[in-house]
Image (cartoon, rainbow, N blue to C red; front, side, top):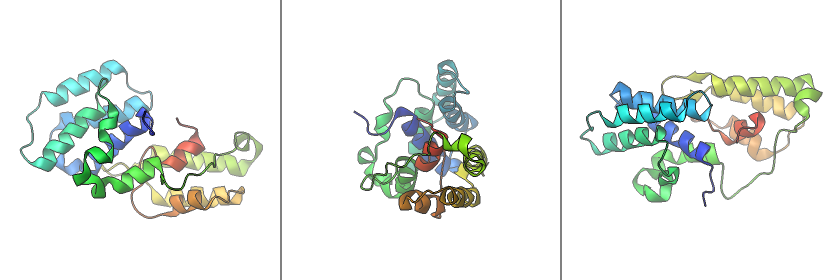
Amino acid sequence: MNLISDRKLRLLACAIARNGWNELYDRAHRRAVEIGEDYVEGLATTLDLRAAYNDATAKKIDPTTRGRMLMYIAFICASADVDLSVLLPLRMPFYYNEWSHLIRDIAGNPFRKTNWNMPADSVVRSDLSGLAYGMAREAYELRKGDNGALDNERLLVVADLLEDIGCEDVDVLKHLRSPGIHVRGCWVLDRILRKV
């Protein structure tokens, strides 16, 4: 049983691949990552995944250890058939420190669970919460650079808006205000946008 959904595991694979974007030299490997992201959003089909996977796996293998690992992860991004739990950090301890911030951004802190969710009626009930939802959506859609990072300035605005509508969950507000890379699949934005 996975504690993280397949959607989040695929987004984790994409975030890891984007973290090493400059080391994915072949366009087919990068395209596999992009198709994996599109698939999660419902913008690509299983056939698109398989085509991207076949294109990526037909390319030359990078001779460096890190390059091979990133290419393998790009394959996972576009795989329709692989068990995505192979990405769990216990199976790749060598890279855990490098990827731990991405895992926490997507899965949250496993030792401090929060029950906070954006109230279902708040988007309709108040202009301010509608603004929070809209800003969260914008932060999710508009990324900065090839590494796929979300715009931290927009996340700060989302945190302020949530606080203004009554959110008192310290973990939620702290996460949105934390420096560093935030990526698609961010556990707080997923809750605001009701993504599963």
